[in-house]
Length: 352
Image 1 (spheres, one colour):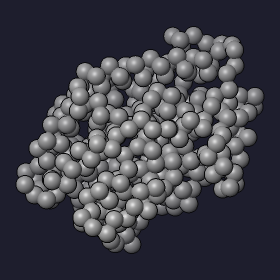
Image 2 (cartoon, helix red, strand yellow):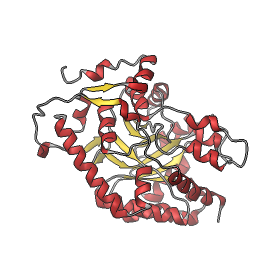
Image 3 (cartoon, helix red, strand yellow):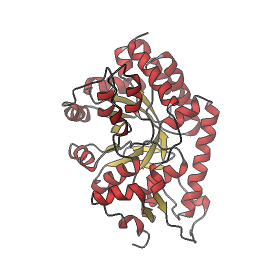
Image 4 (cartoon, helix red, strand yellow):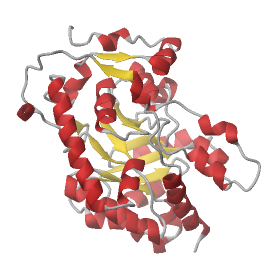
């Protein structure tokens, strides 16, 4: 078995071993309850249009795995969940499939099981336009995610050490593909400086993927035979903080929330803070390792809770959630205050 495929299997196994329901960064986010919703549950519309992409629900199955026989079976299961629930779904990094064509079906299973749904391909920022096109073609992708993961790479024993070309690679890909390009962190969050830079070069879709879910610095540190880098396991910004940073400088881009999203309340709070849609990874992996039906049932439960919560907030559409009153407290508020982000604007939006 190629070393690359061993690593893909290790990533999934370690992610599950480290899986835990910890404190969500959204514990610092609180809705103001107003007693008269003014709408009915039947009025709620969960669909979202994000630029060129249309979603039946405001959340999707985000990038996880592929590149080995076992992870191919997992991607098939994820494709089935996507098909049965109407969710968009993203492959894991297709770089392994490009290096080892014999494992390309570990990604194409996802499209085979979900022929009519939204499928996103995924590739690292170290690749250029040629490989980006190959990744898109491999799964007939509706969009391409380019992941940026510098903390993971520097901790990974066999990881990349050169990052100078990442921005120029992204520009090259942006100019040469004909599907939407999503730039995605992998659990370390984004700063407003990062978001502003991506917007300046023309990126329209940005997944801030904050700290709180799968910790790839922890996973790679565990894989290191020696010279551990324990200090980097706490690196990065939380998802809630990253959303506040992104929205503070948002222009014409669409912000995607991901990283530690485990509940319907995490989803609705992400949307209220300004995300267009929400990506969920480790929670889906945790469920499908148990049972596909469990994942399908959970998706339907989330949809139900989203509808009920939006009714209480008096918001018929997902876009209207950005007009709800939200109080932000705790460590998230402390960070925002030090960064000069005015949180009073979130607390008094419905009265405008």
